[in-house]
Amino acid sequence: MRYVSWNVNGLRAALAKGGRDFLVESRADAILLQEVRARPDQVKLELPGYTAFWNAAERRGYAGTMVLSRTRPERVWCGIGVAEHDREGRVITLEFAEHFLVDVYTPNAQRGLTRLEYRVQAWDPAFRAYLQRLLKSKPVVFGGDLNVAHEEIDLANPRSNRRNAGFTDEERAGFGKLLRAGFVDTFRELNAEGGHYTWWAQFANARARNIGWRVDYFLISRTLRPRLKAAEILPQVMGSDHCPVTLSLG
Image 1 (cartoon, rainbow, N blue to C red):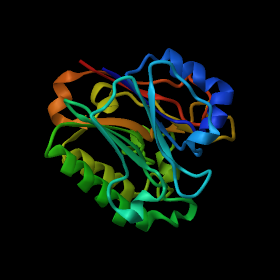
Image 2: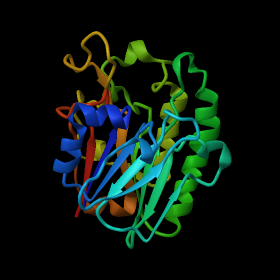
Image 3: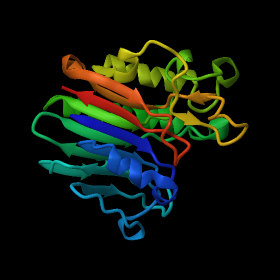
Image 4: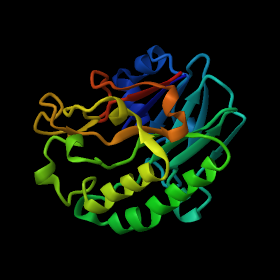
């Protein structure tokens, strides 16, 4: 089982920059996309063998998620069942026979931390509780842009970014609570080295210099750890300010 997750920073823009070729060539069983910023009637995307599931935000051109799946799931639903959090199209869940697959685009705390309180006091606990409800039924795989670098190893300049969005103590603690809730950070489980990032600022030649952040993840239930075969970051794939991440389960 191979999954791919990618924050495309606008699906139409990513496709115009060659993203469709990557989606086709990935040969993934499912592809999780975030920051789609489009509705189905605005995008012509036909990938043979895949069924597309959309969750567009109420606000046009903002946020949104999408999953492309080769296997028809038993059930699909959007959101986490809390109206406050479900207006921005941030979560899609597919239920398969053996596990749930969740695509998530976590809210950004924003410059000046204007949305930090919402992020850590409202969204984080609600999303974690949602995952814990799913866990009572069967294992969970979730992937997406979590908008946080968990440890100092997960960004190039930790000292200068303390208290910046994505690297506040509160956001990092929220990620730690996900791990304690029974999940495994798949890439870090298999890779202890620094210098692996998934997002780069679009100035100062940051991507070429690899001055980045690891904010895109696949996490799995601890019970799935024996099936974890690979977790990769694909910085060579262009088309967005994020790069795709992958997960392989045996």
